[in-house]
Every structure is written in structure tokens, then in C-alpha cells.
Length: 520
Ligand code: BG6
Image 1 (tube, rainbow, N blue to C red):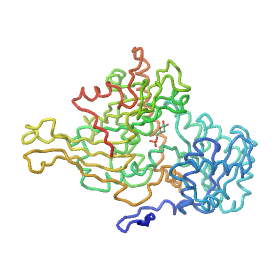
Image 2 (tube, rainbow, N blue to C red; image 1 turned 90 degrees about the vertical axis):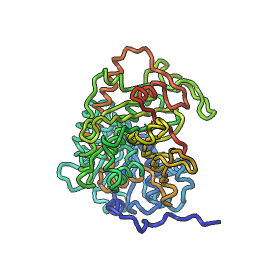
Image 3 (cartoon, rainbow, N blue to C red; image 1 turned 60 degrees about the vertical axis):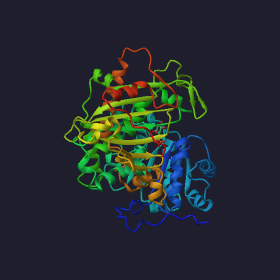
């Protein structure tokens, strides 16, 4: 039997940019909402992985802050039990865990109780090695968004916020959802800025932490052969699909108040769109990248309600089965209103009206309870002139396409036409690049990278205030158009399909179709 290769050091051919871990200084990490799902499923597993790989500074001290009374030992035991349930972490390496656990503490407090923050302050200063942390703190708000401003204000009152003097590096990570519309996002920004200047705020969009999403920049601007084609002269249209196989599961109450447009489109999908459409940044500096991303969103004019209704589709899943598993219709899912009009699927055709993309439609779709769990970007190129093959083969002559598979089975596939061997015929062929085959390296989870970057103060992979607000401008317009729509009910789609017929019709009206979702 061949031994399992351990992850190799950086490949000889690789050109390393700024090594993030080296910049991350030891810091206190304070998790508010420390007994919640996010802490158990994402934050602590990421800290554990980083610690195990030696990427977390050893002096890092982790503090859980939550309401229930608990000892440090009970808190650690709960985290350990939860860690065992996380698939990509199992089995937990006892020594690595113990080493991290010895630097995890618990502080009991209400989010709105000054006494809790006083206890936190005291604890931060008294744990072994506290002096080494030198007031460096990363506060992680894994709480309901209604508490974001509250916690920030209490931290300021307790003297734990960055203050106006600079110097100390105290940073705040906020989870999504960041507001529920433009007005509430602006309000939230104002509330957070009272105590935390923009450069100390890290708004999570976990899609930006995915390796394949980061690769969009490297792929586009680290090569010379794609960029000349990456514009309206050569690209016919762009498709972005984020399909999920699961329904709303246990999150009925959150989801029913949110819907697909706010849950996925406003954040993850607009981030993907920005990275695909942006101009080359002046440098790899966070500001330069954010500037280019926000320009893309600003180049999408707010469409009128009529335009939106003609260019968008929303729908809900009905009853059915996926892979033999019975799926309840959305309206009968636990904690969903029986008369809910919340969309579980959305498709939207958008125009990025700038010099590069004018006239090139971007078709976005996302939904729950669909046929496949897949996130993919398809760049579909214009057809070749029809003088030779196209004249005879017509629609059978496939378009060139670049299929960027974000997840799972991460990879990039180039579609082209080739001669069928032995016959005077032409047919579609593919060039495949698969992460799993090309790199014998561990693909880090998004939260690992994001935590490390926040510790290092690098905000490139977080969303900036103006990006979030521009995305809300568009989603607000979409939702306002839907709200005023006279239709009685939303279309239903069958679980296990790729959405309602209306979604196919949206592209068919333009003489196009959704690219088939492959199983690779
Ligand atoms: C979250 C949404 O932001 O992203 C969820 O709230 C969704 O509804 C999830 O399931 C998808 O993330 P991923 O990484 O599994 O594609």
C-alpha cells in the first residue's frame, strides 16, 4: 500500500505572495455568541485546524462570551464534543486539541450587561500570557445582527474598542446578514462606526474565503491568455449558479423572513459577479481590490420595476423527492408560514453597464432543494463565424465556454470543438483542470483563511461598507418590484429540478439556455 502523502511544502514552482500567517500577531479572540451553532460548526473547527497546522500564533487566547453560566472546563468539553461532529476535522487529534483548549476561556455575560464586559476586561488582562497580547483583540460577533451595535457600544464603554488614538489593534468581525435592506445596513454601519472605524471592521462573506473564489483573481490576472477575451467583444454572456440540494432544514424562521435574494444574492452572488467582472486592480492591496469590485456594482443601474419583473424569476419549492428522500413543500417546512410568499429560488438577468461589459447579460440563479449542490460560473463565448462548420452544424456546434467550478469537485473546464476521429465531423471536447488532481494540497476551509486574515488585519477577503450598500441598492429594487407585483402566488418548482420553467424561459427569450450542470 502506498503511504498517504502529507501536504507538501509550498511547491517549488509556486511564487509566494505575502505569507498571511507570518503577519498574524498573537491576539485575544473573543467570540460573542460562544455557545451557538456558528461557534461550534465553523469558528472553533477553523481555529483548531489552524492550531494543528501550526498557523495560529501559539500565544493566541480564545474567550467565549455567552449568557449561560459555565466553567472553562465545561465550555472546552462542549467545544470538543461539537468538534467531533465536524466531518472535515474528524478524528480530533487529542494533543493538538489539548494544546489549543488550554488557551480557551469562558466569560459569562449578557450581551447587554455592562458587568459582563467588565468581567471580560478583567479576564483578558489576567490569563497567563496576557501581557504578550498587548491589547490586540479580535472580537467575533456570532450573534443575532440586532446585537451588533449593542456589543460594539459596550466594548467601547468598557475601554475595549480601538478608540480614536489608533495604536492598539482591536478589530471586529461581523457575520451576515449585514442589514436586511439598504436603510438598515446603513444604520448598522453608523452604529458600528461609533466605536470601530472602517479599517477595524471585518464583514464576513464566507464565499470570499473559499480557495476557488480567491482563485478568480489569480486566474484572471495571473495569466495573459484569458483577459484579452474577457469582455463584450468575445463574451456572449455569463452565468452564475449557486444551487443547493438541501431545503431550509432547521432554519425555517430565519429563512422565511429572509428569502433567497437576501440570503444568497445580495452577498455571495454579487461578490462572485464583482470578481468575475472587475477591472485589474492597481495592486493586490485590499483597498485597490475593493475599489474595483464596488465599481462593478455601481455600473449596474437600478432597473425600473417593469424591467425587474421582466428580468427576474422567483419561486418556491413544492412537494417532491430528492435522491429518494421526501421533501416537504416549503410552506410546510417547520417554522415557515403556511401562506409564505418567501422565494426559495431566484434568477435575475443583470447588465453591467460599463465599457467592458455593455450589452453582455449576467444571468444569476440560486435556490434550495435543487437537483445538485453546485456553485459554478460559466463564461459563454460568442459563436464562431458561421462560414465553415456553424453553417452546417448550427446549434450542434457548441460555444466555447469556460466553466469555473467553485464547489464541489473544484476545477476549471474549457469547452471547445474538435474533429471526431475517423469521421468528417466536429464535436464538443473539454480540457479539464481539477484541484484534486493538480494539487496534492489540503484545500483550507473558508473560515480558516478568513480568521487568519482578520488576525493579520488584512481586509481583502471581507466586504467593505460601500460594496454592501451597493448590493443592497439592487436587492432592494428587486424586492420592491416583487412586492408591488399583482400575481397571487409564486410559481412552484419540483424539488430535485433546477428551478421553475420560468427560469429556463428567462434565457430562452434571449435565445440562450442554462449550461447543463455536470456531475464532475
Ligand atoms: C449561507 C446561507 O450564507 O450560505 C445558507 O445563509 C447557505 O442558506 C450557505 O446554505 C451556503 O454556503 P456554502 O458554503 O455551503 O455554499
